[in-house]
Amino acid sequence: MNFKLQPIENVLLVPKIANVHFFEFPQDYGTKADKHPFCELIFVNSGEIFVRSDGYNGTLSKYEMLIHGANSVHALTCPNASETSVVIIGFECLSARLNAFAQKPVRLDETEIKHLAEIVREGRNVFAPPYNVPVYDMEKKKKQMFGSEQMLRSLLESFLIGLIRKHEFFENADENDDVDFQINEIIKYVDNNYLERITLDELAFLFRTNRSTLCKEFKLATGKTVIEYITEKKMHSAKRLLEQSKKSIAQIADELNFDCVPYFCKFFKKQAGVPPKEYQKRIKANAKTQETFL
View 1 (cartoon, rainbow, N blue to C red):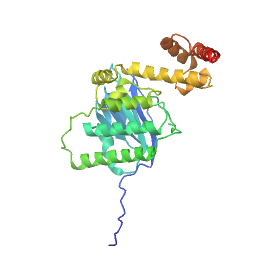
View 2 (cartoon, rainbow, N blue to C red):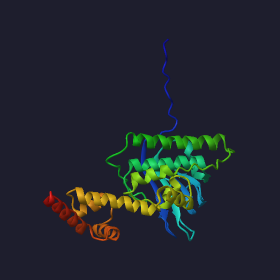
View 3 (cartoon, one colour):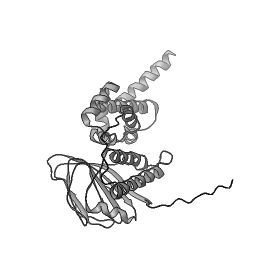
View 4 (tube, rainbow, N blue to C red):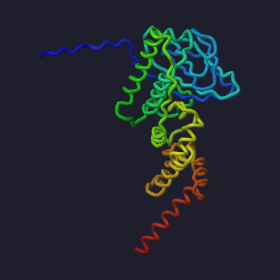
């Protein structure tokens, strides 16, 4: 039989992505009016924000999303007295169908939020930190998992196509309130990203649970709090580098993503009881003693 391959139509393309952020805005935070030649998705994970834009002026509440069009002037403020966590993704897309999401907030259901969380997680595989600080040039990681950039683009395109389908044709679709909470996935994520800045709010968002359930299940599974677990991982890496490498304290602090050498030294002394340099000296002294006995 002669099979015929059919071409696949591309109805929505995301050729470029500027950033993938998870922000935790402090009280009374606000931005100046800005615009850029790409779309900007903004999703409120907790709290609420007030948005001013060419397409919409008003409140964006928890689990609501808006997509500013390219070159749309926009700004936001956090009117509440509590902190607000927000996902912001900048991307290039020429589909006119996205214009509908610039005029009125859309409330995402649990399935859509899970999909958005996947995008943010994949964004961690593509882009280097910081993730919670506005930057105009979000650099890519030098070492990426196989296919990370294509996966990120595919996930975002799939997410946008799903939104358009639902809100054009299935406006009355029921929300799915089931939460698929897998503590092993969270532990694996922490194991792979413990050197980067991880917060409880971000973990709760990425894996679609809440802080109390996250803390309870993590402690039951590991015997430690999230902070204790991350601290132990960092200390293990620090000791290994001090014992086995010829790198300087500054190089080790940088490799472990500490902001500065003094902070690394303070952290290490608090956990080990001695500064890293003293720890390194003791390790070398013990090694020489063992050589003498041998």
